[in-house]
Amino acid sequence: MKQIIEQARRLAIPSKKLQQDKTKVAKLAFNLVRKQVTKYSQITGVEFGGSYVKGTWLPNKADVDIFIKFEKSTPDKKFVEISKKIGFDSMKKFKPYVRYSEHPYIEATIRGTKVNVVPCYDVKKGQWQSAADRSPFHTKFMLESLTGPMKDEVRLLKNFLSSNKIYGSEIAKQGISGYVTEVLILHYGSFQDVIKAIAKLKKNQIIGKPTKSFDTSIIIIDPIDSNRNLGAAISNENVGKFIIASRAFQKKPSISFFKSHLRPKIFKKNLENTIAIQFNYKPRSPDIIWGQIKRAASSLVVQMELGGFQVLRHAGVIGEKNDAYLLFLTQSLKIEENFLREGPDIFFEVESETYITKNSKNSMMWIGSNRKILSLQKRRQNDVSLFLNDLLKNHLNKSGIPKGLKADIKKRFKIIPAKKVTGKCIKEAVAELVSTDATILSFN
Image (cartoon, rainbow, N blue to C red; front, side):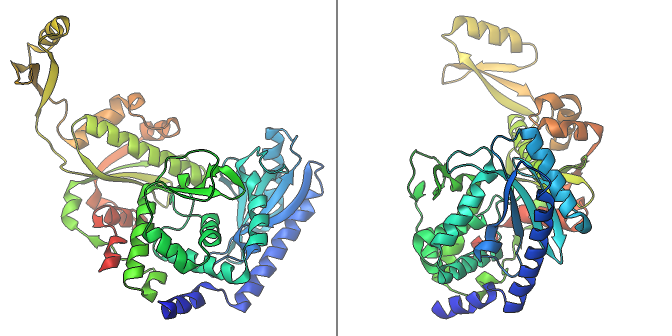
């Protein structure tokens, strides 16, 4: 294993030339931002943040984060207005655009490197006014805590997570963030020790020292805020993948774990029971649309199961031309026309009479061995395509779909067999939906 880890470490550490190039981009961006902030009295300072300044960035994932610190008394409207102005003006030569977290921030690409200009409030530790306020404290803490060798261990862990497709905190991924990898290395000491610990992870295991209780699959306490559980942002699926990948690497170490080796095993017969809802959406931040389509897919699963359809897996995915897809793998696209409904116990007089009166005309009824009145009811729809079409056309307000998407879906939507979708990323999402999870195949 040591030989494999040493080989993987060389893949994870950027070359001196790449480090020099990245430093030039970072200095250029920083100077452009610093030039703009002098125009505003509300700004108390500008500083680097994230993996670049901490020296934990990967050769192929090296964003540069620049934080603009505002006086804590700055009104929210001014905070947003000024930070966007600074971001756009400083990055105007590099096609800047807005991204969203709790507050909007500006992103641009300079010589292949993403640069994020992020606003935060200049506050004391623990007196957070926005989610980004912790970031400068994270940076300072890690710069003081991580040794040089530990930084390379962070890179090694990041590369492992990235190759196993569980790295990244964005809403679309819900994976392990860069900061979490730093916390794990700091807690356990090395990549190998993290893998050993995660392979033996227990449900609700706590990493760190909390000041209150949490209930998530994994609990990772933020070292600079003991009330914050970093594990809450990681999906159960990604926690599971992390555990499986760690066990597999321990059982059979290989450099392939650091080279995007995973290839899902596709079961094409499952395509026959997979359906897609396609619609176009009004342009908005990727962070916002991803959150909306994930909630929409989950809400429709609830409605479909209430309608009698068993949904095995589901996903939401964004295309390349402001089009989105909600994907569902079902047990069957068609179900029985009739279903059994259980009524009240015969000893509940009023309820029994009401149930009989309501259902006697159109339903076959009898008394079951459990003393309850049973009726055989006809479904409104037994075809999932017709069910979804009726739901989205006639009952959209009761569908549970986020308000932000309703106008888009109301304007136009299509329900199509998933095997007929087009576009590379959409086809890949469908293939993943009907495949054995690639991480599980690591044991082979």
